[in-house]
Amino acid sequence: MAELNIFHYIPQKSPVHNMDARIKLICMILLTVSAGIASKTVDLSILTCILFIALIVSRLPIKNLLLEIRYFLFLIGFVIVVNSYSVPGTPITSIPIHGFTWEGLNFGLRYGWRLILIFLMCTVLTGTTPLFLLKSVIEWFLAPIPWVPEARVATMFSLTFVLIPLVFDQASEMQEAQKARCIEARKNPIRRVMSLIFPLLLHTFMRADEMVLAMESRCYSEVRTKAVFKTSTMDWLILIFSGLIFSMIVFHRF
View 1 (cartoon, rainbow, N blue to C red):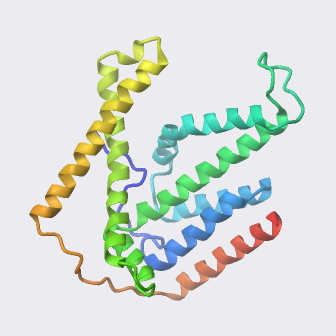
View 2: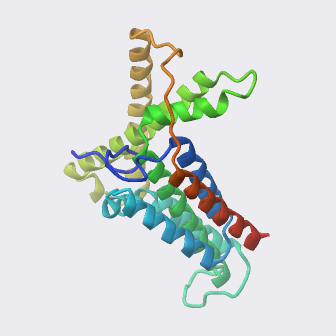
């Protein structure tokens, strides 16, 4: 079975791949925070355009990434339903269930929009930056902070970046296996979800234990060769542009 593209590094020759990883991480943080605090449709539309430009320039498989967003649709749908029911306003009379409002539905859709933007922005970072560079960037930023074991913290982050795509790959593989065994034909949705969650958690913990044993058997050490970073003029221009977008959205928000 083919691996998922989301949260995987996809080697390409593109300007986004060639960016300084430090600048790329700062830009991602600025844009994700902007997506999290954006309250107007215009701001979310601008961020969406920037995101699709980044996806096109980085030559990532946009169609596959959008299809893989379906794994987050349950969370997004749950957020929309909760906001539609909890936010007071004009009732939606076309729905037989009492308590849903148009204002809550509008707020929930905007919240789901923000979540999709944040997921895809993180995908741009992980899809265009090798894992060892992400680890080196985190270590570089933490090095000036006293009493912080930057190498150990960076290793923890890198292991997290390793496990997240493995969990998605395992979930996709288990779903295909369950389809072959007609588990989806069960009428009880709770049993269908439980039949996926428990084996997935078991395999995740087993994979984590195997990774720890592999690192110990290879005498893993925190003393590693430092990465060399190079910053170009284009990197600084992109950073300034991201800062301006962040400032504009903060101004609109507050």
